[in-house]
Image 1: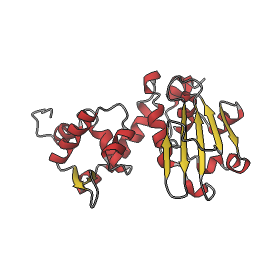
Image 2 (image 1 turned 135 degrees about the vertical axis):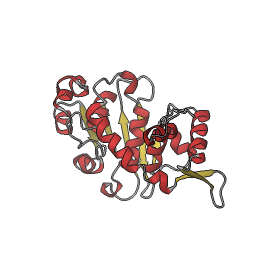
Image 3 (image 1 turned 60 degrees about the horizontal axis):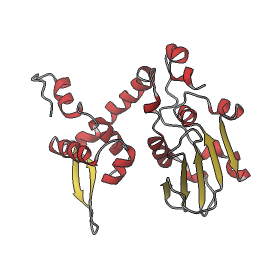
Amino acid sequence: MRKYGQFCPVAKSAEILGDSWALLIVRELLLGSSRFSTLQRGLPRISPTVLNTRLKELEENGVIVKRKLSGQRGHEYRLTPAGKELSSVVEALVVWGMRWARDNMDAEDMDVTFLMFDIQRNINVDELPGGETVLCFLFPDLKEFGQWWLVYDGADIDLCYQDPGKDVNVFVTASSRDLIAVWMGDYPMSAALTEDRLQVTGETALCKSFRKWFPLSAAAPISRPVEFERSGFGDRVG
């Protein structure tokens, strides 16, 4: 763990949370992830070795606890009171990041794996009909991971990047950049639909209720500085 040699609370906090991935692991735990495999889905570019190391460091510093699953194999990770208190820190970073840290987005930032995982955990299943519903997301611009399926069985919603072999109720088609822009509030959904940059086809009722079951990111409503509109990501949607 990096040491700054200062008694300043900012320095001491940075020693614990300033290493790569630490705050993103806390973000995922705050969003409800608790298993090692689920944390990996929210952080697709982290190696198992690094994730394991960061989890141990957070546990040693009293941010999380590791518990054996009752009656099952494996463990889960939970935030301690100290870890839960980081929610306000993460929320502040969300606001600051949406306003000031996203004006130089490049292709490597367009992580469709994280996008689909975030969509999975935010789909408003109360707006889906009873029984099984299969949603297929198509990204024509991607050679790999260009198709994803969300399968809702009335209780759980599963994310698949291989065809589950089920009839699809709705297809959502957009470039990865455009759907990320819509999800994050950078590209108005109404404009994307009108300009056919976002297409929703399939069962009529599900297409009509798209805006109800497909919520935007919780960060989408955060206002941006004028400079973002002129020269940031919003300028590069097209």
